[in-house]
Image (cartoon, rainbow, N blue to C red; front, side):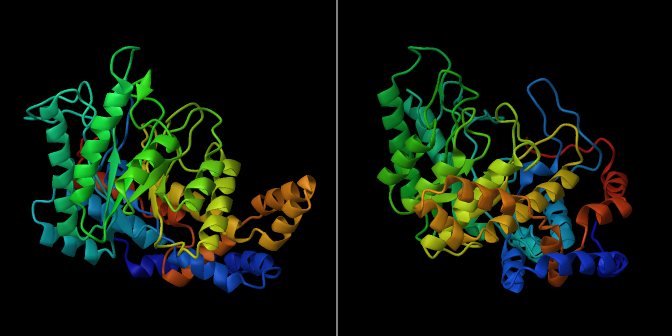
Length: 424
């Protein structure tokens, strides 16, 4: 399904008067409003293929109607999102869930929707049908050489698929670890993992990046082989200049200071990108900004400051992706909400009075520094984000248009009420 251009124009016309009023109000005090709006237009957030269907927990999965049954339909769904907000111009694939049968045709379909292929994701946390060796006791860390070899070859296979599609990065997330003391030798597990990553790294094209993702828990609960940002940084430092740490906001122990982690990784030139989500208890994979919006703002504050300090391009120099999964929401509605939350927060971070904040920090004026950040966080940036969409040819209110056009109903009618997304 596609959204006709005239539908977007009609929607925008109905909201334009009120939008202009709100935009005039916020831009009256912003001398560089156009520069901020242009940054918002340029900023793109990749959509993961696995977020297009209803997610689930180990207790159950309650699929909704009209879910994408193939890679082609997943691309069409991301194209639909991008037509609504013009900020979802990339799709991230998971292999073997999304193996392209015809890479040329898949690339052409993506191009029709204005999409590029973001990072490729390997999967050694599940046993696939017909797989010779099991990952029950780990993949790259496994004590058995043949299991490690299988995991290495899978990652190289993923790189090759990515090369065919025009991707330029590989994300490696390992569920490797242990559930009980004494289950494995920590040093041996680290060394096996490093050796495997080195072989995968050697297979990267010259212009590619490798993102090493970490997680403190789950599915192993005593130890994980890439358990935190320090361990990921250790791996990536040993691997070389094409290896970077990837931060998933749900992969930390409670109350971790993620904004400080971000600042230090940026300082070291080893921050590769983000998987955005939100959480109350653990790796909940909830809608971005739905639980801890101030933390998200503080993270973006460090991102903007740190990237500007290094002369980095906000749009291209880090990988931005949503990683969420839900049982109770329409996945496309949730993704629209998440992209909106990211853009609103990015806009707030762009508005931080940086010179005043530096002056307060240098004067040890704690109160002034706190006020500057909190006042900026309380700024309503919705009109700026909406104006960026309007100038890019998208909908002023993507979620409202999605609902008024009954898109989920159309998808369900087209694909069936029992359609279940491939993969996760």
